[in-house]
Amino acid sequence: MVHEKELSVEQVILDIFSQIDKTDKIFKAYLRTNRDEALQEARVIDRKISNGEKIPPLAGLPVAVKDIICTEGIETNCASRILQGFIPPFNATVIRKIKDAGAIILGKTNMDEFGMGSSNENSAYQVTTNPWDITRVPGGSSGGSAVAVAADEALVALGTDTGGSVRLPASFCGVVGLKPTYGRVSRYGVIAYASSLDQVGVLTKSVQDAALMMNIICGYDEMDSTSAKVPVPDFLSACRDDISDLRFGVPGEYFKEGLNPEVKDAVLKAIDHISKLGGKVEEISLPSIEYALPAYYLIGMAEASSNLAKFDGVQYGLRIDDNDDLEDMYRKTRSSGFGPEVIRRIMLGTYALSSGYYDAYYLKAQKVRTVIKEDFDKVFKNIDIILCPASPVPAFKIGEKIDDPLTMYLTDTYTMPVNLAGLPGMSLNCGFTNEDNLPIGLQIISRAFEEENILRVGYNLERHYNQTLKIKRPKPPVG
Image (tube, rainbow, N blue to C red; front, top):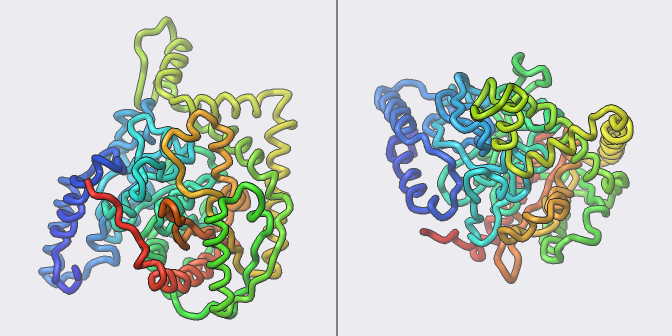
Protein backbone atom coordinates (compact mmCIF):
# COMPACT_ATOMS: atom_id res chain seq x y z
CA MET A 1 0.00 0.00 0.00
CA VAL A 2 2.93 2.31 0.71
CA HIS A 3 4.49 1.59 -2.68
CA GLU A 4 1.11 2.26 -4.36
CA LYS A 5 0.81 5.56 -2.42
CA GLU A 6 -2.45 4.39 -0.82
CA LEU A 7 -0.93 5.00 2.60
CA SER A 8 2.00 7.17 3.62
CA VAL A 9 4.90 5.75 5.60
CA GLU A 10 4.36 8.50 8.15
CA GLN A 11 0.78 7.33 8.69
CA VAL A 12 1.98 3.74 9.15
CA ILE A 13 4.46 4.85 11.80
CA LEU A 14 1.87 7.07 13.50
CA ASP A 15 -0.58 4.15 13.60
CA ILE A 16 2.06 1.86 15.13
CA PHE A 17 2.92 4.39 17.83
CA SER A 18 -0.79 4.89 18.49
CA GLN A 19 -1.04 1.16 19.14
CA ILE A 20 2.06 1.28 21.36
CA ASP A 21 0.54 4.14 23.36
CA LYS A 22 -2.68 2.17 23.76
CA THR A 23 -1.35 -1.27 24.69
CA ASP A 24 2.25 -1.11 25.86
CA LYS A 25 1.37 0.16 29.32
CA ILE A 26 -0.07 -3.35 29.76
CA PHE A 27 2.37 -5.47 27.77
CA LYS A 28 5.59 -3.52 28.48
CA ALA A 29 7.28 -4.82 25.34
CA TYR A 30 9.44 -1.71 24.85
CA LEU A 31 12.15 -0.37 27.13
CA ARG A 32 12.30 2.82 25.06
CA THR A 33 10.91 4.07 21.77
CA ASN A 34 12.51 6.04 18.97
CA ARG A 35 9.45 8.11 18.00
CA ASP A 36 10.90 11.40 16.75
CA GLU A 37 13.63 9.84 14.64
CA ALA A 38 11.24 7.20 13.28
CA LEU A 39 8.77 9.86 12.11
CA GLN A 40 11.57 11.91 10.59
CA GLU A 41 12.82 8.89 8.64
CA ALA A 42 9.26 8.11 7.52
CA ARG A 43 8.83 11.61 6.06
CA VAL A 44 12.11 11.26 4.13
CA ILE A 45 10.89 7.99 2.59
CA ASP A 46 7.52 9.57 1.75
CA ARG A 47 9.29 12.39 -0.08
CA LYS A 48 11.33 9.88 -2.09
CA ILE A 49 8.16 8.00 -3.04
CA SER A 50 6.45 11.26 -4.06
CA ASN A 51 9.46 12.22 -6.16
CA GLY A 52 9.42 8.89 -7.92
CA GLU A 53 12.82 7.93 -6.57
CA LYS A 54 13.85 4.29 -6.28
CA ILE A 55 13.29 3.04 -2.73
CA PRO A 56 14.94 0.05 -1.00
CA PRO A 57 13.13 -3.26 -0.29
CA LEU A 58 12.23 -2.58 3.36
CA ALA A 59 11.35 1.11 2.84
CA GLY A 60 9.18 2.23 5.74
CA LEU A 61 9.03 -1.18 7.46
CA PRO A 62 8.62 -0.60 11.22
CA VAL A 63 11.03 -2.84 13.15
CA ALA A 64 11.44 -3.44 16.88
CA VAL A 65 14.93 -4.36 18.07
CA LYS A 66 15.97 -6.41 21.10
CA ASP A 67 18.01 -4.31 23.47
CA ILE A 68 21.09 -6.53 23.17
CA ILE A 69 21.76 -5.28 19.61
CA CYS A 70 23.75 -2.03 19.37
CA THR A 71 21.94 0.91 17.79
CA GLU A 72 23.85 4.11 17.12
CA GLY A 73 22.55 6.99 19.25
CA ILE A 74 19.93 4.84 21.01
CA GLU A 75 20.60 3.54 24.52
CA THR A 76 21.42 -0.18 24.55
CA ASN A 77 21.64 -1.68 28.01
CA CYS A 78 20.62 -5.35 27.66
CA ALA A 79 17.91 -4.72 30.29
CA SER A 80 20.71 -4.45 32.85
CA ARG A 81 21.56 -1.74 35.40
CA ILE A 82 25.25 -2.19 34.68
CA LEU A 83 24.85 -0.80 31.14
CA GLN A 84 22.32 1.88 32.04
CA GLY A 85 23.03 4.99 29.99
CA PHE A 86 25.27 3.24 27.44
CA ILE A 87 24.68 4.76 24.01
CA PRO A 88 26.59 2.90 21.29
CA PRO A 89 28.55 5.07 18.83
CA PHE A 90 27.88 2.58 16.02
CA ASN A 91 25.26 0.26 14.58
CA ALA A 92 25.49 -3.52 14.69
CA THR A 93 25.84 -5.01 11.21
CA VAL A 94 22.24 -6.26 11.22
CA ILE A 95 21.03 -2.76 12.11
CA ARG A 96 23.15 -1.18 9.36
CA LYS A 97 21.72 -3.68 6.87
CA ILE A 98 18.07 -3.13 7.72
CA LYS A 99 18.50 0.66 7.81
CA ASP A 100 20.24 0.57 4.42
CA ALA A 101 17.21 -1.41 3.22
CA GLY A 102 14.89 1.37 4.43
CA ALA A 103 13.58 -0.11 7.67
CA ILE A 104 12.59 2.22 10.50
CA ILE A 105 13.56 1.35 14.09
CA LEU A 106 10.63 1.86 16.45
CA GLY A 107 12.53 1.26 19.66
CA LYS A 108 14.34 -1.25 21.85
CA THR A 109 12.47 -4.18 23.38
CA ASN A 110 12.59 -5.71 26.83
CA MET A 111 14.49 -8.92 27.46
CA ASP A 112 15.95 -11.10 30.17
CA GLU A 113 19.13 -9.36 31.38
CA PHE A 114 21.93 -10.13 28.88
CA GLY A 115 19.67 -12.79 27.35
CA MET A 116 19.74 -14.96 30.50
CA GLY A 117 16.29 -16.37 31.07
CA SER A 118 13.31 -18.18 29.61
CA SER A 119 10.48 -15.95 30.79
CA ASN A 120 11.44 -12.25 30.45
CA GLU A 121 11.18 -11.91 34.24
CA ASN A 122 14.91 -11.29 34.63
CA SER A 123 14.87 -7.78 33.16
CA ALA A 124 16.19 -5.14 35.57
CA TYR A 125 13.40 -2.76 34.53
CA GLN A 126 10.05 -4.45 33.91
CA VAL A 127 8.23 -7.72 33.29
CA THR A 128 6.72 -8.06 29.83
CA THR A 129 3.32 -9.78 29.74
CA ASN A 130 1.93 -12.23 27.21
CA PRO A 131 -0.71 -10.60 24.92
CA TRP A 132 -2.85 -13.75 24.97
CA ASP A 133 -3.03 -13.78 28.77
CA ILE A 134 -1.42 -10.94 30.68
CA THR A 135 -0.98 -13.08 33.79
CA ARG A 136 1.50 -15.23 31.85
CA VAL A 137 5.09 -14.78 30.63
CA PRO A 138 5.87 -14.14 26.95
CA GLY A 139 8.94 -16.41 27.02
CA GLY A 140 12.52 -15.29 26.97
CA SER A 141 14.82 -13.86 26.38
CA SER A 142 13.47 -12.07 23.26
CA GLY A 143 10.01 -11.78 24.86
CA GLY A 144 9.71 -8.05 24.27
CA SER A 145 10.32 -8.51 20.53
CA ALA A 146 7.79 -11.35 20.30
CA VAL A 147 5.14 -9.35 22.16
CA ALA A 148 5.74 -6.27 20.00
CA VAL A 149 4.88 -8.35 16.91
CA ALA A 150 2.00 -10.30 18.48
CA ALA A 151 0.38 -7.14 19.87
CA ASP A 152 0.67 -5.16 16.61
CA GLU A 153 3.26 -2.84 18.16
CA ALA A 154 5.67 -3.66 15.31
CA LEU A 155 5.39 -5.48 12.00
CA VAL A 156 8.65 -7.40 12.51
CA ALA A 157 11.30 -7.59 15.22
CA LEU A 158 14.89 -8.67 15.71
CA GLY A 159 15.86 -10.96 18.56
CA THR A 160 18.79 -13.16 19.52
CA ASP A 161 18.74 -16.89 20.19
CA THR A 162 21.33 -18.52 22.48
CA GLY A 163 19.33 -21.53 23.65
CA GLY A 164 15.92 -20.85 22.12
CA SER A 165 15.43 -17.16 22.88
CA VAL A 166 13.72 -16.47 19.55
CA ARG A 167 11.78 -19.74 19.16
CA LEU A 168 10.49 -20.01 22.73
CA PRO A 169 8.83 -16.55 22.89
CA ALA A 170 7.56 -17.09 19.35
CA SER A 171 5.89 -20.28 20.55
CA PHE A 172 4.42 -18.62 23.67
CA CYS A 173 3.13 -15.59 21.72
CA GLY A 174 1.90 -17.31 18.53
CA VAL A 175 4.25 -15.65 16.04
CA VAL A 176 6.93 -16.92 13.65
CA GLY A 177 10.41 -17.07 15.19
CA LEU A 178 13.38 -18.09 13.01
CA LYS A 179 16.89 -18.74 14.34
CA PRO A 180 19.29 -18.99 11.36
CA THR A 181 22.35 -21.23 11.16
CA TYR A 182 25.24 -20.10 13.37
CA GLY A 183 27.40 -17.84 11.19
CA ARG A 184 24.61 -17.03 8.71
CA VAL A 185 23.97 -13.59 10.29
CA SER A 186 26.74 -11.32 11.58
CA ARG A 187 27.02 -10.99 15.36
CA TYR A 188 29.11 -7.82 15.09
CA GLY A 189 27.56 -5.25 17.41
CA VAL A 190 25.52 -7.84 19.31
CA ILE A 191 26.54 -7.78 22.98
CA ALA A 192 27.75 -11.32 23.63
CA TYR A 193 26.22 -13.68 26.17
CA ALA A 194 27.66 -17.02 24.94
CA SER A 195 29.68 -16.38 21.79
CA SER A 196 29.59 -19.91 20.36
CA LEU A 197 25.80 -20.12 20.73
CA ASP A 198 24.40 -16.60 20.12
CA GLN A 199 22.65 -15.91 16.81
CA VAL A 200 20.48 -13.04 15.61
CA GLY A 201 17.00 -14.15 14.54
CA VAL A 202 13.71 -12.67 13.37
CA LEU A 203 10.20 -12.58 14.83
CA THR A 204 7.42 -11.93 12.35
CA LYS A 205 3.70 -12.32 11.71
CA SER A 206 4.20 -14.62 8.71
CA VAL A 207 6.71 -16.99 7.16
CA GLN A 208 7.06 -14.73 4.11
CA ASP A 209 7.94 -11.78 6.36
CA ALA A 210 10.65 -13.93 7.95
CA ALA A 211 11.99 -14.79 4.48
CA LEU A 212 12.02 -11.11 3.52
CA MET A 213 14.03 -10.20 6.61
CA MET A 214 16.43 -13.10 6.02
CA ASN A 215 17.13 -11.76 2.53
CA ILE A 216 18.38 -8.56 4.13
CA ILE A 217 20.22 -9.60 7.29
CA CYS A 218 22.10 -12.70 6.07
CA GLY A 219 25.56 -12.69 4.54
CA TYR A 220 29.27 -12.71 5.29
CA ASP A 221 30.68 -9.91 7.41
CA GLU A 222 34.42 -9.39 7.72
CA MET A 223 33.81 -7.67 11.08
CA ASP A 224 32.68 -11.00 12.58
CA SER A 225 35.32 -13.76 12.66
CA THR A 226 32.58 -16.41 13.00
CA SER A 227 30.65 -15.17 9.96
CA ALA A 228 30.29 -17.85 7.28
CA LYS A 229 31.32 -17.32 3.66
CA VAL A 230 28.35 -19.08 2.10
CA PRO A 231 25.98 -17.90 -0.64
CA VAL A 232 22.76 -16.20 0.43
CA PRO A 233 19.81 -17.54 -1.58
CA ASP A 234 16.56 -15.70 -2.26
CA PHE A 235 14.60 -16.91 0.75
CA LEU A 236 11.33 -15.47 -0.56
CA SER A 237 11.46 -17.83 -3.53
CA ALA A 238 11.56 -20.72 -1.04
CA CYS A 239 7.98 -19.84 -0.03
CA ARG A 240 6.29 -21.99 -2.65
CA ASP A 241 3.90 -24.91 -2.88
CA ASP A 242 4.83 -28.58 -2.58
CA ILE A 243 6.88 -30.32 0.09
CA SER A 244 6.46 -33.80 -1.37
CA ASP A 245 10.18 -34.07 -2.15
CA LEU A 246 11.18 -33.56 1.51
CA ARG A 247 11.77 -36.32 4.06
CA PHE A 248 10.77 -35.60 7.67
CA GLY A 249 11.98 -37.09 10.95
CA VAL A 250 10.17 -37.07 14.29
CA PRO A 251 12.50 -37.69 17.26
CA GLY A 252 10.86 -39.94 19.85
CA GLU A 253 12.94 -38.30 22.61
CA TYR A 254 10.85 -35.11 22.26
CA PHE A 255 7.56 -36.86 23.02
CA LYS A 256 8.29 -38.44 26.38
CA GLU A 257 7.46 -37.53 29.98
CA GLY A 258 7.17 -33.79 30.63
CA LEU A 259 5.45 -32.88 27.38
CA ASN A 260 2.09 -31.18 27.91
CA PRO A 261 -0.68 -33.37 26.39
CA GLU A 262 -2.27 -30.47 24.48
CA VAL A 263 1.11 -29.43 23.06
CA LYS A 264 1.71 -33.03 22.01
CA ASP A 265 -1.70 -33.29 20.36
CA ALA A 266 -1.27 -30.05 18.36
CA VAL A 267 2.23 -30.98 17.18
CA LEU A 268 1.15 -34.49 16.15
CA LYS A 269 -1.73 -32.98 14.16
CA ALA A 270 0.78 -30.73 12.37
CA ILE A 271 2.93 -33.75 11.58
CA ASP A 272 -0.14 -35.58 10.29
CA HIS A 273 -0.88 -32.65 7.99
CA ILE A 274 2.71 -32.80 6.69
CA SER A 275 1.97 -36.38 5.64
CA LYS A 276 -1.25 -35.30 3.91
CA LEU A 277 0.74 -32.71 1.96
CA GLY A 278 2.96 -35.50 0.63
CA GLY A 279 5.86 -35.29 3.08
CA LYS A 280 7.49 -38.61 3.92
CA VAL A 281 7.51 -38.83 7.73
CA GLU A 282 9.43 -41.37 9.80
CA GLU A 283 10.45 -41.75 13.44
CA ILE A 284 14.08 -40.99 14.25
CA SER A 285 16.23 -41.04 17.37
CA LEU A 286 18.54 -38.43 18.84
CA PRO A 287 19.84 -40.48 21.81
CA SER A 288 22.26 -37.90 23.23
CA ILE A 289 19.60 -35.18 23.53
CA GLU A 290 19.13 -36.00 27.21
CA TYR A 291 22.62 -34.62 27.86
CA ALA A 292 22.01 -31.34 26.03
CA LEU A 293 20.65 -29.41 29.02
CA PRO A 294 23.70 -29.74 31.33
CA ALA A 295 26.12 -29.30 28.42
CA TYR A 296 24.33 -26.17 27.24
CA TYR A 297 24.31 -24.50 30.64
CA LEU A 298 27.94 -25.35 31.36
CA ILE A 299 29.10 -23.93 28.03
CA GLY A 300 26.75 -20.95 28.16
CA MET A 301 27.66 -19.98 31.72
CA ALA A 302 31.40 -20.44 31.11
CA GLU A 303 31.29 -18.18 28.05
CA ALA A 304 29.09 -15.67 29.89
CA SER A 305 31.56 -15.41 32.76
CA SER A 306 34.27 -14.53 30.24
CA ASN A 307 32.20 -12.18 28.06
CA LEU A 308 30.78 -10.18 30.98
CA ALA A 309 34.17 -9.65 32.64
CA LYS A 310 34.57 -6.40 30.70
CA PHE A 311 31.65 -4.76 32.53
CA ASP A 312 33.64 -3.54 35.51
CA GLY A 313 32.72 0.13 35.86
CA VAL A 314 35.72 1.36 33.83
CA GLN A 315 34.62 1.27 30.20
CA TYR A 316 30.82 1.09 30.10
CA GLY A 317 27.71 2.20 31.97
CA LEU A 318 27.43 2.01 35.76
CA ARG A 319 30.29 2.84 38.17
CA ILE A 320 30.05 2.90 41.99
CA ASP A 321 32.34 5.74 43.15
CA ASP A 322 32.03 5.18 46.90
CA ASN A 323 34.88 2.70 47.19
CA ASP A 324 38.24 2.10 48.88
CA ASP A 325 40.31 1.15 45.84
CA LEU A 326 40.08 -0.20 42.29
CA GLU A 327 39.25 -3.75 43.36
CA ASP A 328 36.54 -2.46 45.68
CA MET A 329 35.09 -0.42 42.80
CA TYR A 330 34.99 -3.54 40.58
CA ARG A 331 33.27 -5.55 43.29
CA LYS A 332 30.68 -2.94 44.22
CA THR A 333 29.92 -2.02 40.61
CA ARG A 334 29.39 -5.61 39.48
CA SER A 335 27.43 -6.54 42.63
CA SER A 336 25.12 -3.55 42.15
CA GLY A 337 24.88 -3.65 38.37
CA PHE A 338 24.17 -7.30 37.64
CA GLY A 339 20.89 -8.98 38.57
CA PRO A 340 20.70 -12.26 40.54
CA GLU A 341 20.39 -14.57 37.51
CA VAL A 342 23.42 -13.00 35.80
CA ILE A 343 25.48 -13.23 39.01
CA ARG A 344 24.44 -16.88 39.39
CA ARG A 345 25.60 -17.72 35.87
CA ILE A 346 28.86 -15.78 36.18
CA MET A 347 29.71 -17.61 39.41
CA LEU A 348 28.88 -21.06 38.00
CA GLY A 349 30.71 -20.30 34.75
CA THR A 350 33.80 -19.05 36.57
CA TYR A 351 33.81 -22.20 38.69
CA ALA A 352 33.56 -24.43 35.60
CA LEU A 353 36.54 -22.68 34.02
CA SER A 354 38.69 -22.59 37.15
CA SER A 355 41.90 -24.56 37.55
CA GLY A 356 41.24 -28.18 38.39
CA TYR A 357 37.64 -28.14 37.16
CA TYR A 358 38.05 -27.15 33.49
CA ASP A 359 38.59 -30.76 32.29
CA ALA A 360 35.86 -32.15 34.52
CA TYR A 361 33.16 -29.69 33.47
CA TYR A 362 33.80 -27.36 30.52
CA LEU A 363 35.88 -29.74 28.41
CA LYS A 364 33.48 -32.61 29.05
CA ALA A 365 30.54 -30.39 28.07
CA GLN A 366 32.27 -29.55 24.79
CA LYS A 367 32.74 -33.28 24.10
CA VAL A 368 29.03 -33.85 24.75
CA ARG A 369 28.29 -31.02 22.34
CA THR A 370 30.26 -32.86 19.64
CA VAL A 371 28.29 -36.05 20.27
CA ILE A 372 24.99 -34.14 19.99
CA LYS A 373 26.08 -32.61 16.68
CA GLU A 374 27.07 -36.07 15.42
CA ASP A 375 23.57 -37.32 16.30
CA PHE A 376 22.05 -34.59 14.13
CA ASP A 377 24.55 -35.25 11.32
CA LYS A 378 23.62 -38.93 11.36
CA VAL A 379 19.86 -38.44 11.08
CA PHE A 380 20.23 -35.73 8.43
CA LYS A 381 21.83 -38.32 6.11
CA ASN A 382 18.36 -39.83 5.67
CA ILE A 383 15.97 -36.93 6.25
CA ASP A 384 15.74 -33.22 5.39
CA ILE A 385 13.66 -31.77 8.24
CA ILE A 386 13.10 -32.56 11.92
CA LEU A 387 9.67 -31.82 13.41
CA CYS A 388 9.12 -31.48 17.16
CA PRO A 389 7.58 -29.14 19.77
CA ALA A 390 9.27 -25.80 20.37
CA SER A 391 8.44 -25.95 24.07
CA PRO A 392 7.23 -28.77 26.34
CA VAL A 393 4.59 -26.44 27.83
CA PRO A 394 2.53 -23.41 26.79
CA ALA A 395 3.16 -20.02 28.42
CA PHE A 396 3.24 -20.34 32.20
CA LYS A 397 2.16 -17.91 34.91
CA ILE A 398 4.34 -14.93 35.85
CA GLY A 399 6.25 -15.88 39.00
CA GLU A 400 5.50 -19.59 38.64
CA LYS A 401 9.10 -20.67 38.06
CA ILE A 402 11.17 -17.61 38.97
CA ASP A 403 12.25 -19.02 42.35
CA ASP A 404 13.20 -22.40 40.89
CA PRO A 405 16.03 -21.88 38.37
CA LEU A 406 16.41 -25.58 37.53
CA THR A 407 12.74 -25.89 36.56
CA MET A 408 13.02 -22.68 34.55
CA TYR A 409 16.05 -24.07 32.67
CA LEU A 410 13.99 -27.09 31.56
CA THR A 411 11.81 -24.76 29.47
CA ASP A 412 14.62 -24.57 26.87
CA THR A 413 14.98 -28.35 26.68
CA TYR A 414 13.57 -28.65 23.14
CA THR A 415 15.36 -25.65 21.61
CA MET A 416 18.91 -25.64 22.99
CA PRO A 417 20.19 -28.76 21.12
CA VAL A 418 19.82 -26.75 17.89
CA ASN A 419 22.17 -24.06 19.25
CA LEU A 420 24.72 -26.63 20.41
CA ALA A 421 24.77 -28.10 16.89
CA GLY A 422 24.73 -24.68 15.16
CA LEU A 423 21.61 -25.55 13.15
CA PRO A 424 18.71 -23.36 12.01
CA GLY A 425 15.26 -23.75 13.55
CA MET A 426 11.88 -22.06 13.41
CA SER A 427 8.82 -21.99 15.67
CA LEU A 428 5.48 -21.76 13.92
CA ASN A 429 2.09 -21.54 15.63
CA CYS A 430 0.25 -24.85 15.18
CA GLY A 431 -2.73 -24.47 17.49
CA PHE A 432 -4.01 -23.37 20.88
CA THR A 433 -4.67 -25.07 24.18
CA ASN A 434 -8.35 -25.86 24.72
CA GLU A 435 -8.80 -24.54 28.26
CA ASP A 436 -6.67 -21.39 28.24
CA ASN A 437 -6.48 -20.67 24.51
CA LEU A 438 -2.68 -20.29 24.60
CA PRO A 439 -0.51 -20.58 21.45
CA ILE A 440 1.48 -23.76 20.76
CA GLY A 441 4.64 -23.78 18.63
CA LEU A 442 5.86 -26.42 16.17
CA GLN A 443 9.66 -26.45 15.78
CA ILE A 444 11.05 -27.06 12.27
CA ILE A 445 14.80 -27.87 12.08
CA SER A 446 17.02 -28.41 9.04
CA ARG A 447 20.65 -29.01 8.14
CA ALA A 448 23.01 -26.06 8.47
CA PHE A 449 22.43 -23.36 5.83
CA GLU A 450 19.22 -24.98 4.57
CA GLU A 451 16.81 -22.39 5.94
CA GLU A 452 15.03 -22.49 2.58
CA ASN A 453 13.57 -25.91 3.45
CA ILE A 454 12.38 -24.62 6.81
CA LEU A 455 10.67 -21.66 5.17
CA ARG A 456 9.06 -23.85 2.51
CA VAL A 457 7.61 -26.21 5.11
CA GLY A 458 6.48 -23.28 7.24
CA TYR A 459 4.86 -21.54 4.28
CA ASN A 460 2.81 -24.62 3.38
CA LEU A 461 1.75 -25.26 6.97
CA GLU A 462 0.95 -21.60 7.58
CA ARG A 463 -1.58 -21.56 4.75
CA HIS A 464 -3.27 -24.57 6.33
CA TYR A 465 -3.39 -22.89 9.76
CA ASN A 466 -4.62 -19.59 8.36
CA GLN A 467 -7.63 -21.51 7.12
CA THR A 468 -8.22 -23.76 10.13
CA LEU A 469 -7.26 -21.53 13.06
CA LYS A 470 -8.56 -18.13 12.01
CA ILE A 471 -11.96 -18.66 13.68
CA LYS A 472 -10.40 -19.71 17.00
CA ARG A 473 -7.65 -17.13 16.97
CA PRO A 474 -8.17 -14.86 19.99
CA LYS A 475 -7.53 -11.14 19.93
CA PRO A 476 -5.00 -9.80 22.44
CA PRO A 477 -6.71 -7.67 25.12
CA VAL A 478 -6.58 -3.92 24.53
CA GLY A 479 -5.77 -1.49 27.31
